[in-house]
Length: 439
Image (cartoon, rainbow, N blue to C red; front, top):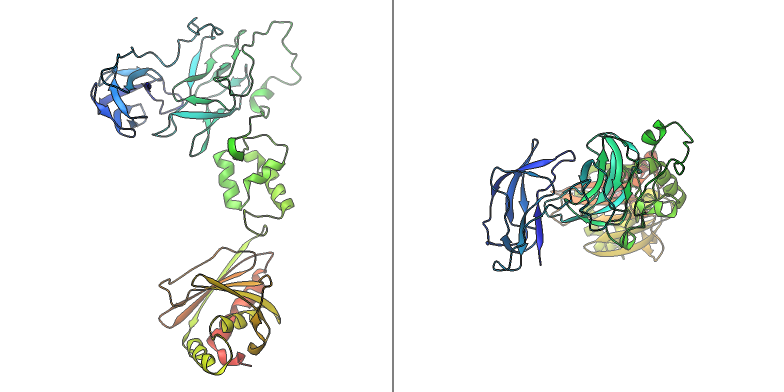
């Protein structure tokens, strides 16, 4: 199987790249991931890896050559003895008739599918941010591309008019392929088509006449500054397509991006959709997947001597009808929270839930939903721990060299900051002076 090796684009406005050196020779066997050559632009130098295993043949550029972006400079073939086809440019010259029967492309600057990763062969066009005929500026977002690692907003890189879109939302386009043309002047003949038959439908060409041109309903500048939202295909497997900025904002706020799927907003989602995400999260009563609700997180810690507590547990094992461990610690924590509380104790991979009251003797095992969760890490090598809030406030208990550290985390709608401080202080007091709680 033939794999074309092209001169990659390391920047949006890059026209050419200088081939610094080949790391493999003509006819040499290569393995996927091995470095084939080094390329230099005015901003960076990058090692380009082999996209597949095979034999390197048909090298058409030498060390020091300045090669146009997208031009095929070598081929990886299944056999070193196979006939070597002459490498061709990955993109037909703009404005020529070399389009295999398709519409003649208008003249202008070709925009290619960028290389966003060392091992990237293709990119999925998520959607266009500009319509045909729009004026674009260098920093305007032209389209969005999804790889196996991220969704990236790609700026135009140059100023002009978008006169051709050669791929549609959902197209999986090889890197280096021309997917758009930006011209210095408006064009009466514009092309809008899909790269593959599996993409969203697109008209094969757009050739407006004076009679067909719609009359503007707003000032011309409005199209540039306020582009219309575009509808894109749904991502495979129910995956949510969102810009990196929105993903960061959602992660920092603890919101679940999948909640936007229930709105009428089209994918991909952008930073401007954050308010809609916030409202959707509040309506759903969720902060994140598996989390109970939205609100601030409180984290408090207390460190105290654990000698009295360990001695008390030894005494309780001999004199009280209890496990002298989980039973006692659950009773202490429950009494610190309320007159009656349900406490779950997680210790060494096992969980036991207790119904507690103010007196230790009234604490019994229960199947009820816990009001408080304890992670007892005493007796382990762990010296500090902090667990994210669950469906109830969480306290981590760590023991080290006679000391005990208690770390409480909770959501604001579970316990206010004041109530969290009271809980932790009461619990720490009982652990430091356990004899006050033996009846």
